[in-house]
Image (cartoon, rainbow, N blue to C red):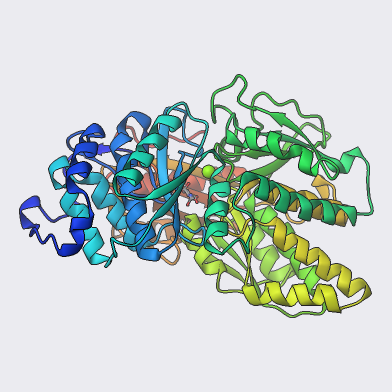
Length: 570
Ligand code: 16G
Ligand code: MG
């Protein structure tokens, strides 16, 4: 979330309106110590930040107070839920100078929305109001301050991350919380740790070792069943965005090497984090990362800076670049899961969850060819995750490569039973599904786990990357950004596919879309940058480019564009 300097309208109560109702309970907060330590992590006057789609994100030098305060908040959340809460210090695919923080809820999920609001209020309170906001949150949420609190902390490889995670620890400690600092972790590893700790170890062991062993065991079991062998199927080039993914994959590699050999690029030994590499760069520029040499038909993938996204790609024999994004990953996974269910003879309800960015071809393929129901939610992992929980098996992916599959407890039990009771082919399929369930990180989208799932499926089905890519052809598309004075003038409905305000904008988009074949377009205010995003797809790249440009102009005119008018050409 870009930092803005100015008056907050997020927490409208002014300092005077706070009635000081320090109840008996609050004597359990050492207010003197909080004030003293808070002054050591002082908030720059007037800095306003918002807990956005993926927590707070801005220049690292503006975040010290936010980290301290998120340490405090994590303790309150932990006391309220009587569970371990996670705090991850990362800014994912943002430039190296940025940083960010997000809280992880008890089952490894994103923080509940009402607490996102508390996070925003607490981060924006001026120094003198901070205590009162803290007390207000604990009153509103009926936090029993006598309850114990436990917080686990992880961080990515940014130069600023170590110091910032120390500020989180200061916040946790001053409120009397216990903590475990995992140090360097991928974001999904921290989600996994939180999930493990709050489910009494049933999900796995809450150590990196436990994570490596659980996933690798499942992967090796699966790939043992694959009939094809040879290097072609079992080696993969991985662009690690010069981030934490490189460290963790290197640590993990020997656990699964009998099933797959990985060659790491952009491993952080020289390049800058996320600079000209990583999943976000590859997806948005539709070209390979720097620092990786690709021979034709070699299978390659990219992680993002905190290893919670993955995209695949290859060069064909003519040297053309082909991107395999989250939509095609979801298609591969859901078709494989569906095949296994048919083989086992189970009719479970399986659903795929996408966002408005999903390529129209993928949705059509899933619905019409695979006959899998598809649902669309707003952008942001929490929305997809939430929807996917409604199914026996919910597969969710954003086109940008963030996603996973969720299995209900009932399904897990059923499959375990089937793997023991059924015979022959059915038993084999049930065993496979059992291992696939273990291989997914069900707490969050996870580049390492997804990579192993994909590699296992390709090996089991004997598919090459080109055959996978050929499932369907993506419709040409284009994404653009438009600068406006206040992006909040744009509000949307129908999972962001239609603009409600400003008046006339949706009508203008409808008229433009009508001019092109197989076309679709939508606009939405970004949750992470101060821009409006425009998406268009059509039957040709030229049409998609034109449509995106025309929609950008409509946004510029009707939604208060600033700076230079959008120009055609990319
Ligand atoms: C964040 C979200 C990601 C979403 C992106 C959209 C999480 C963990 N991450 O990175 O899911 O696709 O924001 O960004 O929720 P935008 O709002 O700027 O388009
Ligand atoms: Mg990320």
